[in-house]
Length: 319
Image (tube, rainbow, N blue to C red; front, side, top):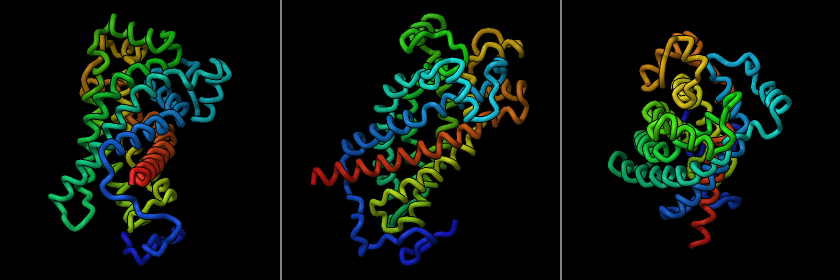
């Protein structure tokens, strides 16, 4: 993508200069509390608005799906899930996602903003640094995933076809009793292996696109939405193989594991990669990629636009 100077707006996107009265510049020096509040709201909305598509993605990543859970596409999957399993089926597990997303994203955005500024000042005193953005995003992911990983395990087990769990608490109790507390962090290293490159790509792409669309870095909802959607799509496509492995570790798909003579619980990223290849070959690493991109594009667009809005609104209110 070609970087343009502030005087040369991209085609179809208005230049955002100091003379633009429609939007004011984003406030500098927002406090960590503001970043946390804005991040919490953004995280909850990001995960809940597109949750039904996330449910479809989890099912489409199944390596040995039940014949009744083989889908041709996202739309067809949603229709069948609602028609055959009930209207609320695509929302199973959304409650645990809400409980995890708020604190996870509060820590995530607060850490990102702090580290981006600190690392950027050491690397590039003149302005924005893509290296600082990538490193800050990676460090923020460590905190985010520590909070979110148990919620992901419960969520994905409830999303699977014929899930044996009645509700969130039943799933937590059953998994803890039968597999131990460690089961909630079995995919943590794989999730970090996926999310660190995902977030690095995500933040670099977002900041890079913002430089092109919004060089003055003013508050402009349209550019935040577009930049977030592009960043989500690029990062999602690049990390789909890791997401497939994470899903296998979280769900411990019985039919798939028994078909390759895996007894007990599958653990470890290397074992997950090997098992996915045994079951689906190279194509197995890209199962559910369409659903993942469809989910991530609006999700990251929502997250960034809501985050930037609340950061702007809360800071202006305090001022």
